[in-house]
Length: 331
Ligand code: UDP
Ligand code: MG
Image (cartoon, rainbow, N blue to C red; front, side, top):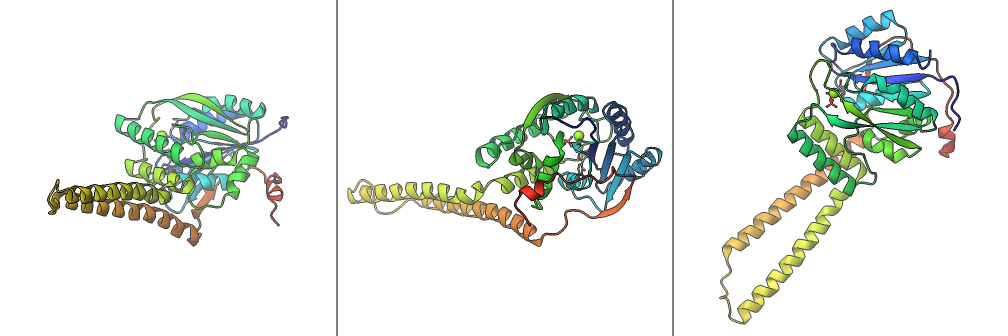
């Protein structure tokens, strides 16, 4: 595929309490992007930081018109901040990355070269995770294992939200109107020509990780619920299996009593165990249903994902539509 000689790049960076990182990342990005194209924008999405991140972004934007910032009205989470960035980015190529230098800017020329070779999505794969502890690693492996066995799309284990997207892919993602944005599943879902590039993930430049175990678990449950209905089918499978075992148990008990091998008085321990087991299973499945119903409840409200408080900088000029919407067969 022939790519245009002249193209623009938007780099979208969600930032939550990253005041000590934004200057470093924008300095590195400006240096590297200038070698690729004169038309670029670095777009920080301040996700309701409390440490003056947006004040730093405003200072940077005042000095360099290619640095832009959007300040959200509160902390909406990494995925929603990323959605805001994709909605606002205007480049022919959009690169999503973290603010903490864990996604090395020096890899961008290689990512753009892959785009020039005809790939529409360049997914980045972490080779090692310097900050991952054993507990987190076990949890994430369990998550990817479950996810890929139960969901409609296959996600690449340990692939972070560091990727290059062609404009058509950004428009495709924007046309997916669900409120719950799980880009690690949405990106494989859209298709197009995708490739994978490995990288070594360095430690954070400054500050501390804001993904707590609770936030990671929420992301994992969002990911499963939004691409898989296995939780809704599970009661049928487990319930059917337990009913089958119970039927055998009842038949065997009756035969043993009839043959006078055991007396009629049943063991109360086994009775109680079955009761407790069925109560536990019932409550678990009601809880899983609750997860799905909660997501449906949030989707039907159709509330905006984020509200913009203020914005600084000069965005890239508005670009022509890719024509993707016409091909969706919509009016
Ligand atoms: N982030 C965000 N909102 C949040 C949490 C994190 O925008 O509520 C951003 C954060 O500033 C960083 C990226 O998401 O740019 C990844 O977060 P972090 O480095 O804490 O997690 P990691 O993925 O490295 O474990
Ligand atoms: Mg990080």
